[in-house]
Length: 234
Image 1 (tube, rainbow, N blue to C red):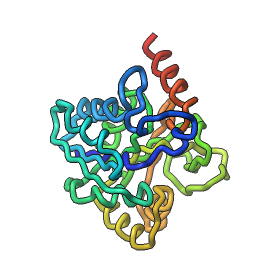
Image 2 (cartoon, rainbow, N blue to C red; image 1 turned 120 degrees about the vertical axis):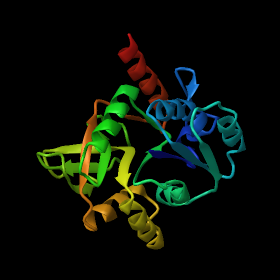
Image 3 (tube, one colour; image 1 turned 90 degrees about the vertical axis):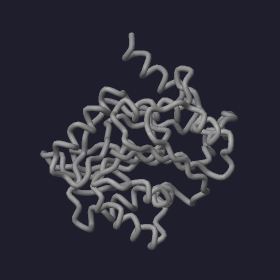
Image 4 (tube, one colour; image 1 turned 45 degrees about the horizontal axis):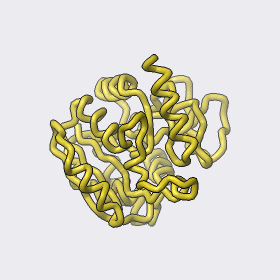
């Protein structure tokens, strides 16, 4: 499976909290976010990995290219207005029947991610979205589902009893690329707009609940992510 890591964000909220490095280089348990994620993807059987970083992230690009990975790796340097445009710029590297896109600041358990990928391969769904009940995002996207975990809406506030929060992890069939192109042509820059368009165009999307996904946007999230991983390993 092809994997795409969206790492072109500038990490402005982290910078406001006094974190000097680029978000992709924030260390969780001593390991940069980007290196941790690349390791998880390689361990999950990646056939190819593409990463997008913005034009100010020379240090990040050089770090990524210096890693010794057991999978083909492609790094695209381009500043984009938002994550949907970032994924659009990686679309030519997503050549298989299915692919996985992830935001670099999502911290989750490798064991859960492997189960997530396994279940998608056995699923008839057009897309499987990583979700969580853990809420640490300032502006979360609520994923509302039925009793079969089929997604029926994406909202900025929870509007049903069965809701989760988007975790920034997406397993999608290739048809999603065509919808992504239409989203970009509409100038949708947010992943939530792309997700809503997939649903409105009839894609069968399912939600897959992770126990916890930490979105690293603030300095306090670093300690949260480290505590989460430490508690699992103890």
